[in-house]
Amino acid sequence: TMASEELDLRGVVLPISLLKCKTALMGMDPREELDILVSDPHVVEDLVKIIKRSQGMAVRPRREGDHYRLRISGQPGA
Picture 1: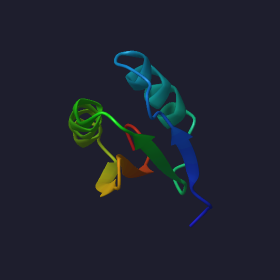
Picture 2: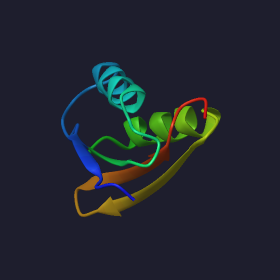
Picture 3: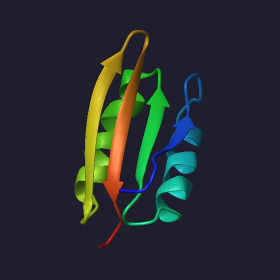
Picture 4: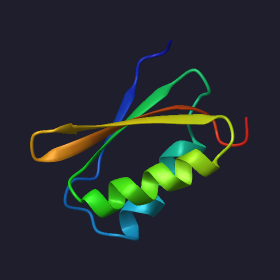
């Protein structure tokens, strides 16, 4: 696996966080993993829903203290 990239969206509000996430996902290599850090549980819910609808992608969310880490792998539409 390639090294994972990290996108820190802690404190970034909807819908800006979703737009930044979408941009990062579109540029992902299929072998890459992307870690997204968010502090808002609503953003976590929305991102998980969006990623689960995207074929070829997997997401593993976990809580880390005062924020969440979502590890995303795969590629949209793969």
